[in-house]
Length: 203
Image: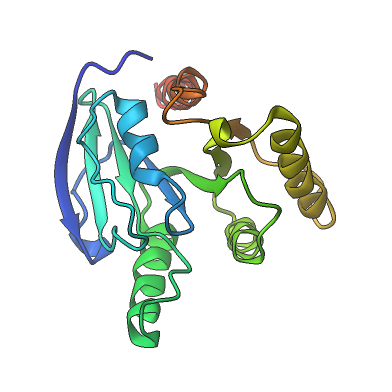
């Protein structure tokens, strides 16, 4: 897929205020500071499309971007930011779950995972929740340029093993690096395949 256009549409704190559109939506979510904004900018080829920050917890809104006038990329708040107060964390949880569970245009959820770490409980719990709710999703390992090939494979295999303890089949898995532009073509082709398949089935 070639990205011809990418533009910001709207930010909000309520799924009911999301764009009134039938376009498919692909939402990106992950633990705070997982590199979500950098990945979105790399995928779209627009360096400043999503705001990046060294401070975790920067994204606290549902952000819609229109891609190629054909589909929406949705930047969701990160989960598990401990420095927020209990009420703020609860508010973000409701915001995230409200969008994921209620937004009928959501076509696929991309769950981002920092590949530098061994399986994290917070990521595993979120993945399990998405699976139990029947949400179509894929796993996207970020920052692959930050560690050796051997450690990268070991950490990803650790997630595979943990998930296969309770899953019969694993979701699609992508390996990415925003700096090296690794995984860009694979992710965009995956989105394009879904869009094409849905267009054919709707004819």
